Length: 345
Length: 195
Image (cartoon, rainbow over all chains, first blue to last red; front, top):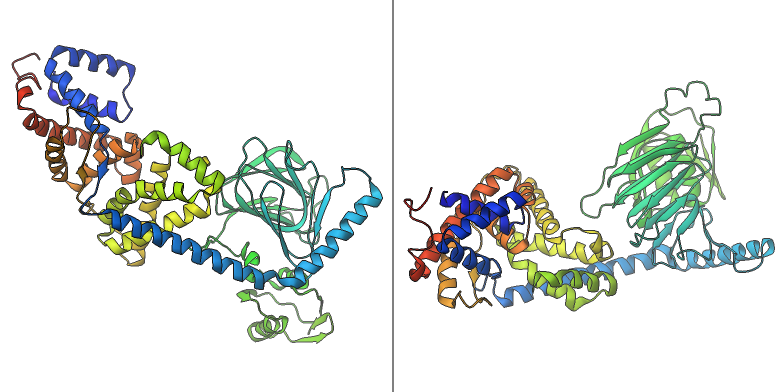
């Protein structure tokens, strides 16, 4: 037996890689020579000695490091808080309060007792964020409704969504979190993701930021799709039992796309609305119009010539006028604003 | 910090946002991660920055911490990718061999057979090993990683990891022989012993 074989086996043992056969072999090698045994014992003792860096990284350097990390966390937290105050503001809070009260009133009249579902709804031009009883944070985009039962979190965590919301779900493997929409269910354990399911849009989109989610299709329960971070699942809102419209046959029913995420804050065009940024990424005008209508609570009337080009751009806290100006500059779409109605011509 | 304490720390951090527990976690991992990052970047200030940002992210996502199977493996991978991203920014995408690790030491042991003197001697021998060999030995010894995990962190084969580990152990056996002269003749059978 060579010494190298002994070293190899001792190495495997310290990495926890020893198979039963090798264990027997090692036992034999150790028995053969008392010297081997004492070496193995010294090695075992050494493996429990922690590696330190008293000269290269003295205690002071570690303390400095910790306080730097603390400062960075604090700075980010402060930034986020100030930003959020500007973002949502009192206007939104008031609007949501009214809507929540209205929602409670609506459900009261329908159903008495403690089975009354909770409703969070937003009007066009408004957004809000709430914390669910389990600590999950939800950002609700304009013109959306989120409903959850009072028993939420007892055995299951289920919400119903019409519209768009961004979820930061608290991890709880015993109670999966499920978002029900018109044609998909999204099932998660603990992750961050965005679901967009507006009734007036042709598709339902699920974008995963972190963790893992499982999407199941309402019309094909056995079809389950796992998403990885940075992936977006687009499901066309047409059902197989409905005749497809002419010229739509070529449209794939389900599409899995990669999302371009900003490596710094992991936000993408799909989720920037949470930061109050309006983002277009190669969108056609007909896709942009409903977004603008919801964002600014306006009605858009098209009298312009058809536009085939696509638009890309980010608007941060910009007024409607600024967005319309950009459209005019880039595609020559002229516009007229009369109260809440915008006319393109 | 003992390895057994890690699950407890993770629970305190994720469940109760316990700041002292988070400090202890950083205290435990920082020097080793710094040595690793420094050997990729050869720029200590940048290496510090990279690791700071990773711990900021860990704190912000502390709720998901229990979902991470093996925190050591996760942290070393996170540092690796962050360092690569830094190198890519500087258009130095190719990293060939690892640079020098930081100089380490073994200061105290609970085992009586290893005196302070002998630990010093052994640490000096390890410090003389090539950087990659040193790193592999440390990742297995201190972070409790498996050969396959080390292989994937360093983008090398499992065979290479095993071979490097054997080289490290050979250096150790040589220094242990020097430390324990009374064992010198017994440590290994002489070639004539048995075969």
